[in-house]
Amino acid sequence: MNTTELPEAIIDTKKINLKSLGRAELEAFCTDMGLKRFRSDQLFQWMYQKDVTDFNQMTNLSKDLRQKLTEAAVVGSIETASQQRSADGTIKFLFSLPDGHRVEAVMIPDFNDDESVRRLTVCVSSQVGCVFGCSFCATGKMGFLRHLHPGEIVDQVVKINAVTEELYGRGISNIVYMGMGEPLHNYKAVTESAAIITDEKSLGLSPKRITVSTVGLTKQIRKIADEGHTFRLAVSLHAASDEKRDKIMPINSSLNLSALREAVEHYHAKTGLPLTYEYLLFDDFNDGPEDARMLAKIARWAPSKINIIMYNNVAGVSLQRAREDRLDAFMRALRDYHVRATVRRSRGDDIDAGCGQLAIREGQAKGKTIGS
Ligand code: SF4
Image (cartoon, rainbow, N blue to C red; front, side):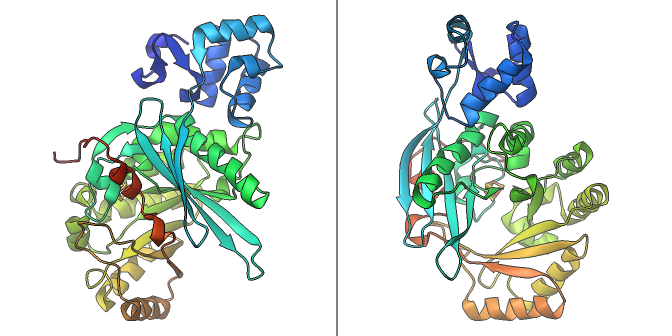
């Protein structure tokens, strides 16, 4: 592979950051170095199973090869800048990227009645900031600064996996791409990162345990289906009419609900997989009987379930978390329409676990939003 073909972000001075490459690109790099294919597997395991960044510690590589690699490449890594643990066990991580930008990830534990661990879910970031500017979202207020590359996404999982191994004696069980950024806006890195995470030589997680969310980027939803990716898809809906969605999600003015419907139907026809809709319930905005009726219609576009999410209020945002009585009535209405719906309570309220909140507090430059 010629380095001139590599995206600018993955070239560190004259050395290639191997963490910025997908699996096939890493193989191409090794071929260009005149190395056998198994060397690419060894490098991959050192980077993603053992979290080693120094070629000199890669003991199954010859001294000559280690020297050659040191001259041509680096293994960049993210660093844990801070960790905050909530009373409910949720841990929020702030990571520093090699260029000084910061992103967040959250680990959410679920416990059985006997307090044993049922599930350890990690919510990862895919971009620094976000261009889509949804009015309720702390990350949207930052604007878009840059995409993460595959290794920067996988590293969040690798670092948190080490923490859960220490705390609970087991690795994480589920990953959701619902942190900072719109995952499908960074399509290549996100799909490459999911492929790395599911690789047996890395974490070997089942694609069934990975959920990628999107605000509704229809071209990319079709592409996921056409390329045969089997991770799960979640669509952030948050309103069930164009009129209301337009008010809180600027993307809806160019990709409205009818465009979304076509993409969702294509997705299901091609993959046979169900999907999830995420629906933040806002007080007196999208929590009435008519909203429930329209949401039930959307739920029938393709086999699906709906996660009703209780919003973590964000400073400076007028939309507020729905009241409990309105939530109850909304759930009753969905049940009457025979819709599969679950309430997701916000976790880690005491540590600002709504994504983007911590990074904003720590201060980052403001980036671009659509329309700006
Ligand atoms: S909700 Fe998602 S798409 Fe919308 S601004 Fe926030 S990160 Fe971006």
